[in-house]
View 1 (cartoon, rainbow, N blue to C red):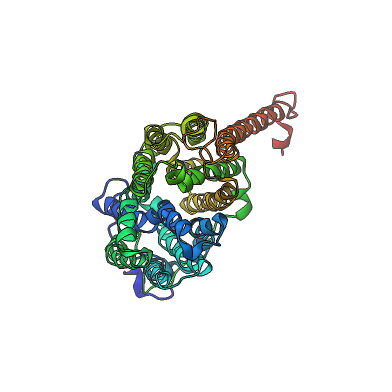
View 2: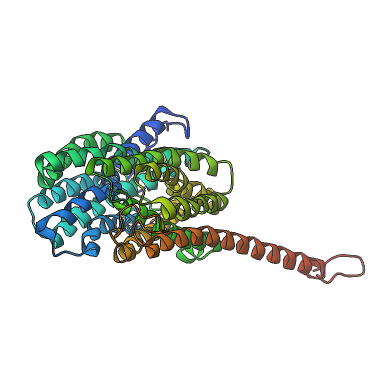
Amino acid sequence: MDPTSNPAEPAEREVRTLPAVDTSREAWLYVCAGFLMEMLFWGPMSTSAVYLKEYASMPLFADVSETQISLVGTLSLLFGYILSLPLLYFYNFFPRAMKPSLWLGVGVYVVSLMIASFVKSMPLLVLFQGVGPGIAAALTASPVIRWLPEWFDKRKGTAGGIMFCGGGVGGMYMPFLFEYLIARLGYQWSLRITAIFTAVIASIAVYFANPRIPISTRAHINRMPMPPFLSTFVRWSFMGTFVCTVFQSFGYYNVGLFLPRFSDTLKGAQGAGLLAAFNVSCIGSEVIWGLLTDRMKPPSAMAISSSLGALLVFTLWGFGGNQGLPVLMPFAICFGLAAGGFCSMWFQNAGNIAGPDKEQQSLLSAGWSIARGVGAVVGPTIGSALYRTPSVPGSNRWGSAGSPGLVGLVAASLAGSALVVLVFSYAENFVKSVRQYNNGKMGQRRPTSEFGVELNERR
């Protein structure tokens, strides 16, 4: 009997032959769709520095502070990340809303950029080029995160890394595209062309982004209860990754924001090329760290990533950041490889923590997204206040590119990220060992009779 024919019988999904996990063509089409959406909605966020540099040089915004201008880039990241968790709870009550939310996200993005192209005040640009695209990014990313554990099990880290590569690919070509469009047509037409291009390509991606287990459009939906909040989030492993992610994002997004402006010797195209090189290296980083977390403990991988990033900031940026491309290009590439794949480590880490509970895996990843958003806003906001244009061109003084305070802040935050995740990981292992030891002692001390039978088992 068809289970959907009886309305009294609850069924959330239609019965059909499902594609294979990890290996099916449909699974990798899903990855391609996620890749395209990452490229279209998150790529512009990683290249917002091109627009911010243009706004900072325009007489129209001469009275606007660096901190206010930076909100165009940071608020889009904030809303893109922090909305993931509430959206996942919303989808649990309204699972049929996931697919429509993908289309809604495309619409919000296109309309926001179109409106932004007609405004001439910074608060409105912050709203329509910052907040609007951030909301759209969350609407398109949350269903993809929610469905990923359905499609992948053993290759979850690899699949997530490939999808996150989309943001790096967008960051590879978009700086040149935006620089060209702004120089030829102005920032307003650049926004309009981006909106039209996104509408076309994103529609194709949304068509192929579907759950592995189709949601029935006819049967009554028997909703699965969400995992308990406290047991999901109040644990050493989650909190360690959460705090680690805040510190890592704090430093990482300062580099992406100020990279094209580190040196007074860089022209517009060179700054765009530097940002593109950084984002290209992030492509490889997403795959590398995703593969590594399929083979090693994610907290260890996170610590290595953040430690390498801190070392590169302290040396290449600290001692040679104002020397132009010969130093900045190696720094951009090496830092992107070291720190650019941090988010791809979440998926396997969530799988290790939650086990086979796919709902809990999605919630953990969404929780870390909030940490990412907090760090992405707080870090660059403080960094903008510390940033200084080099007063002595070509200075060899440590921290001359941006200010010693900014360089030191970024290096310290990345080092703190590595330290925090290791401390929490060791603390969790220590607590487990103590519990196992205490349980063993309690088991040995159970009272027994003279025949060696436990007294509480006698009747």
